Amino acid sequence: MKYPLTLDGIKKEYAVFNNGEIALINNLKDLSAERELVTDGLYIFVLCTGGKATVSMNNDRYEIAPDHLFVAPPRVILHETMFSIDFECCCVAVSNRYFQKVIPMHENFWDLTILFENSPLVPLDQAGVELFHQYYSLIRAKLVAKPIPHVNEVVRSLILAFIFEFYDTLERFVKMAPKSFNSSQRIFKTFIDLLIGSYPKDRRISYYAEKMAVTPKYLSVICKKCAGQTASQMIDRYVIRDIEYLLRHTQKSLKEIAFELGFPSISFFGKYVRRHFGVSPTVLRQNLSSANPG
Image 1 (cartoon, rainbow, N blue to C red):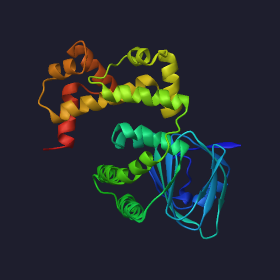
Image 2: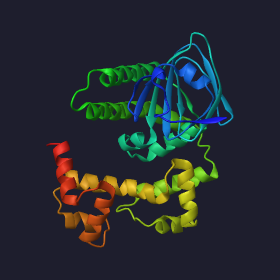
Image 3: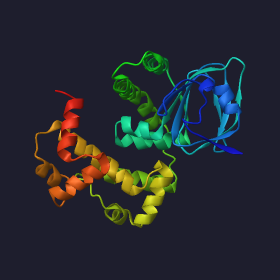
Image 4: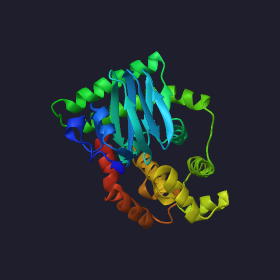
């Protein structure tokens, strides 16, 4: 029987820390042995530090040895897990929503996402292993210590710094690995390339679908399958980032920003911002400025 694995479903005895966005798991053997698991809205990162393990992901079998990083992305089935007696690891589970909120929206992020689905086992060199341990230890120390006023911001900054430093290691693996994308993944990657390569971002799904010779509905189905979001949600993610950047880092007026991003009027721009941020553009700019002074 398949069991949906969510952060909320990870029991306290399995985790050193779990706040619903990030979990540090110290009892991976018992957690995995319970039943066939389906990762539901989370990424699981496992760095093997000793012993060996085997796991099947979507019916493909993987052998995990020391210095191997195993990544289980959202919406995969984990089953037939076996561990040696001396198996040890560092294990982090991150919600998909938090991961997408923190990680830089670089075009190769989607290459990495697809890579993890096709090749979830990444052999790290010594520098990569040491880097993982350094950040894991520091992030763990901040999470389990007595709370400080801005612990969430500190942890988010540490994760972002880790991503930037660790990205080079994973990017080298992406370039070395064969691009074995299936048809759905190729369509999705083309959509992302079009989306990233355009400015301002057209907010109509039909704009991208027409360029790709597919229907808007089919494009949304592909996006949902590959990224867990509809095409419209994907577009909004990138538009939101552009809005945040212009409000935070430029002195342009709201009217100038609205027209630069392709909104027909400042009124329409205001409604869009309220729908996605819950506040007006003016208040959002103030909030962004106070959160990032100077």
